[in-house]
Length: 419
Image (tube, rainbow, N blue to C red):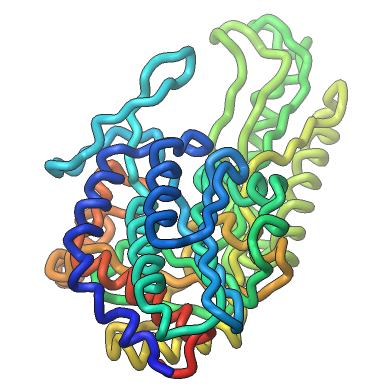
């Protein structure tokens, strides 16, 4: 049976159309659960390629199913949503889109995380697979997920019956464009993206006049002690070979300098890579907050609320190895080992719902010359914009071609018998 090389033979022919599609998507970003224009366009293009389209999953999610004879089912996912960021790339196709913000005030929207690249690459791969049905057997599910940035898109699609609306896959695949040289692909077995957990702690004190602190139980002081003590979790309770981050991102208390307030509120973000560490950090946060409040004899214990967050992304070893070997054959020395990533994703909720293995890899989006200069000058952190930056702008090529190739080569490991 022919393999991925035959499927990819048409890539140069459709390349200009994919580049135009990418620029259009970049110019018209949409926030999570509001990707109406994007999902409508995705659905039309999939329908034109002969896919059985199921749309409106979890609000704006779209799935295209292409059955092509007996064989495995492979699901490939791309996320579609953008971020409330004002674009500062200077591109001719930069976003001028706004969306209603707090109080109805328009806020700028930008594809600052590269989801426009992801959509373009999966649509390109889906089209090539549809045009090369004699080169593979099985079923391809092209899944376009809503609301990844808010952390609830995958859950929303699962809750809306995703597992009943598409065939159960044998494996799930996904990729993400990253600030590494364009043309490069990177795989990693085991943990690849961190779990993210958010906590809100409210310390209850007793208010008083600023000149009579003896009449108060000062929640500002207690919150400050909690902030300091939280710094010892990673430095004194987590082993040095185990990555973890605890960040206090906000502290709010009081309204004027001459008053001890009734309460103080802080919000904390935690990043970990395994469930044991995740549970240990959570227990430590709760223990410290309660202990500091008890030591200060607060009127009542603190309120501790967990909200938002993302699961860890832990790649299946056998699946990742299979894809990594295929990438090495196809991309040569441009196939690398991906560094452990500190960002977070909700993709893993989809294979979890199906009970199947998955792998998630990275593709480069930075101009290789720019990247090399930054490395040489020691300015990588300042000169290479990262995801979620207002300056994040993947170079169109070879980023798109690489992303399409990666999807086809990976999916072909299940859907064909040759590389």
